[in-house]
Structures are given as C-alpha cells and as structure tokens.
Length: 122
Image (cartoon, rainbow, N blue to C red; front, top):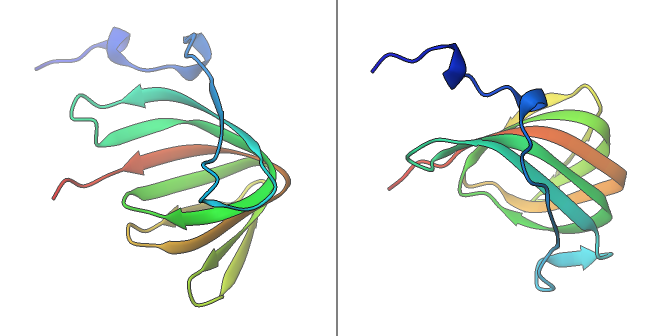
C-alpha cells in the first residue's frame, strides 16, 4: 500500500484533543498532580503511539508494559527503579524506558515530554 504526503502526521497542524486527568489514588505517592496527554498518532494495530505528556509536581509508581522513548522538553523528573537507583532527567534529555521497568516517577515542579511508545503484543 502506497502512502503519500497527506498520510504524514504533522503535530502542529492537528487539533488533537488534550486529555487531562489525575492519577488513581493507589498509584500516587506524593501530591495529586494534574497530568495531560495529547496523543497525536496511534497505529492501526494500537501498539504504537506518539504524543505530548505533561505533569505538575508529584510522584507515583510506574510499571511499564511498553517500551517508551522520551524527549524531555521542559522541567525535570526523577525516575527511580525498584532497587532504589535513580536517574534525574531534564529538558534536552532523550532516553528509552524498557518494557518491564518498575519503580517510581517524580516530577520536580513541572515536566513536559514527547513520548513514543511501542507495546509488543504477546
């Protein structure tokens, strides 16, 4: 199947809905951060998604079933694994979180990122 220029997803020309939410109480460790996601693309198989996420300050547990590439646009976060090792990420940092990662995510003040997620089906 041939694709053409009209099949390219250009974020700036889309009017993608922004979904705002608070995390479920059982995931929250500190604060009650307002978060939002603007999913600009979802593949037909629903395994591949791309968009923009942002959050106010707070921390919560994470359990990744997907691979996620992150490009931090603004602010910073501290990601801590289940063994207690942490990584501080800030604007300009680009990284991949592997499927199977468990731990915590803490937003320090504010954080905004571009995400690219791939969830492999079993």
